[in-house]
Image (cartoon, rainbow, N blue to C red):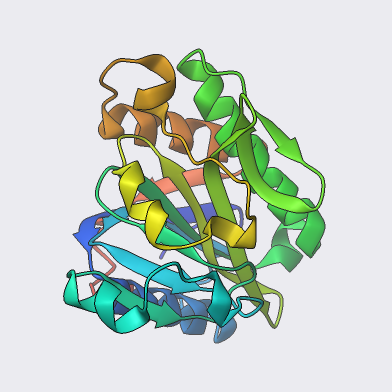
Length: 233
């Protein structure tokens, strides 16, 4: 464990993964931090999900445009979660981040943490010449009055779970099944739609990691590491 410093975050890219599996990965990381197994303040997972709609703890059933059973018959999973926020869609072409962090190590409260995640996303989009901004009382990131990234987190015992979702080349039609984020007049967009050209999700992930390190003033240790196993992560 000599490579793990107090301000190091273990990073792993999970590629495309089902939502239930990602929840288990997060829970394992949460327990490792809570029990101080690896002496690290956090983990950062980047990934894409198979099509899934998730509902946060503030979500309302009337924000589904289509019946849930019809959505599931279309091959889209539906999950109720403990994160903040309301309904959103995750799917291929969307860069999802799950930072599992001990906020006490980073000296951050809940609002400052959400603002920091927004800043990482805003700086990432700036690398691709997309001007974006946050809106008070609406966690996430916007461009041209359209929502391009969502944020929904949970914090237990000072440790974060869930995170952000940035639309890179996402199928935006999928959002028509719900009222995204519970905002009736919201228009969802993506990086490719905004730019009118293809965007590599791998390049976006590299930019995200770069700005995550800067904003959170941390170092990144990429898995695999010889002393860690899949069970640890």
